[in-house]
Length: 197
Ligand SMILES: C[S@@+](CC[C@H](N)C(=O)[O-])C[C@H]1O[C@@H](n2cnc3c(N)ncnc32)[C@H](O)[C@@H]1O
Image (cartoon, rainbow, N blue to C red):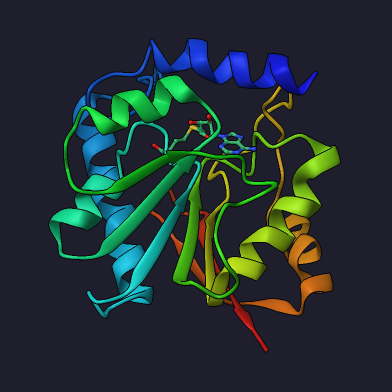
């Protein structure tokens, strides 16, 4: 089952546009760029120190990591798909890209000032999502930023609609609590900052 999941992302990587994702039918390329810049703004707001170490968990082809690197941050991007990581490496940005699974991160405890995920946890299967949350906690010093889906959608294979309440419950056993909720131009919450107590 998990092998098929990885293959799914390897195939999807081949459909990614150079600016970092498959273009949704209701968005233009300019919308994607606007959205990416807004997401970078949110990340940097919660991690203003450019000397910070940041983990982009499920980095895809480096859409956000490369922008953060350009601002001076030290970034590690990991993804389960070798095709995604190969494409990310071709950008030659200086980001450290590595094939790795979020359920078993190849990093020591507390080594990132911020761990963020963008459009990743909504794809992670139920049977590993709690392990992934515990790994986020383990490798971060105290901050985890996640971007829940702004629109409600019908769950399907590898696309699981999970709302704010789901994520609140997911991180609570690890003593991580949502301290900030950010709204997007689409009007719904699209970022949750979790902090250790
Ligand atoms: C929708 S893409 C988002 C990519 C990137 N975060 C972005 O916003 O451009 C989801 C990414 O999560 C990765 N992914 C999904 N499950 C993962 C896991 N368990 N471990 C590592 N990466 C995973 C996929 O391979 C894919 O690249």
